[in-house]
Length: 156
Image 1: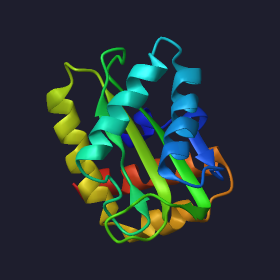
Image 2: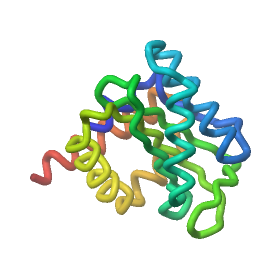
Image 3: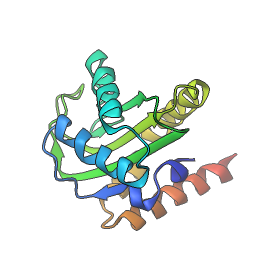
Image 4: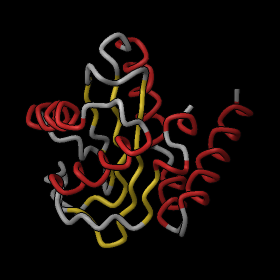
């Protein structure tokens, strides 16, 4: 569940970063603050190495940087919303406004694949992404994600 990965304390509304490197630093700070056992330097290196293979700015206005990092237990994430846009070297060469950062433990390969598939499904629901851009607080963003999850569960 996305609400488990992105609790309100791991959501930034109003990212200050202007480019990809800055956004990695800003969002990783939130993750490490919430879970200090994570090796910040190691996680940052893993994110950058993954990003060098291919941009994670995969949908218009949305990026999903993700990496495997040995100091992570399970799956952790941060969600950032930029009202001004982040220069991200995205596939469409346009600024990114929503960033879902994910870090996985090395033993979470299967869960990694499941979560990335869920993201593919989520990102096709443009109404959720539009709704997230209108939220003013981490709690409002979290509540929107919970509402989306509940709606998806009732569809099954």
